[in-house]
Image (cartoon, rainbow, N blue to C red):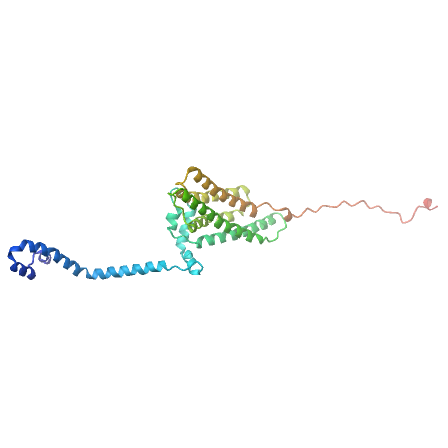
Length: 311
C-alpha cells in the first residue's frame, strides 16, 4: 500500500494557485514549470553530493600536490622510493624472471611502471658473495681429494666478483638504454623502457645464476656445464622476451644485432665466471713432487797408503 501511495499523483498547492491565476495558459505554464521544478529538485537533492564532490576534488588536488613535491636527486628521500617494495613484490618479480614465457612481458606484468633497485642491488651482492665463496670452496674440496694441493685463501675474488657483477648490471643496461634512445629518434614508433626499468630487468635476470653457482661445487665438469647452460638459457630468454616488444618496431637487422649482442654479453659473463672462479688449479697451487736426488756411491779411502807405494 505504501508503494501504491507513493506512485499516486498528488496535487501541489503551488501548481493549483498558478493554474487558478492563468487558466488559459495551462499547457504553456505546465511545460515551463516542469524544467523549473526539476532544476529546483536537482539543486536541492544534489546539495550534499556537491559537497562530497568538492571534498573528493580537494583530496585529489592534495594527492597531486604531494606527487609533484618530490625530493631532489641529491637527497636520500629521492632514492628511498626505489627501495619501497615489500617481500611479495620482490618474490613475484624473481618468479617472473625464472619462468620466462613468450608473450609474457616482465615489465608490464611484474614491474607495472614501478621499477625498484632493492631486488637488483641484493641479487648482485648475493651473486658476487656466492661466487667468491664457492670459488674458494672449490680449492678446499680439491685439496681434500689431493693432499698435494696447497690452498691459501683468495680474498681478492670477492673484489673481482663484486666489480664484475655490478659493472655488468649497470653499464650494460646503460649502453642498451642509450642505444634504444638513439634508435627511438630514428624509428618514431619505438617506445623504449626507462633506465631504471632496464636496470631492473638485468638485475632480476641474474638471480638464476645464484643457485647455479652453488651447484657448480659438484666436481663433475659435464654436469657443471649443463647447469650453466640451463641457467644461461633461462636468463637470456627472459631478456629477449622482455626486449622484443621494444625492438620489433625497428628494422630486422637492428633488432637481430641488438638481441644477439644481449645474448652474447650474457654468455660471456657466465663463461667468464665459470673459468675464473672454477678454473683448473693454477700451477702455483700445485706442490712440486719430491724428487730423490741421486747421490754418488761412497768411496772409502784407505786410511794409509800401501807399503809398496810408500817406498
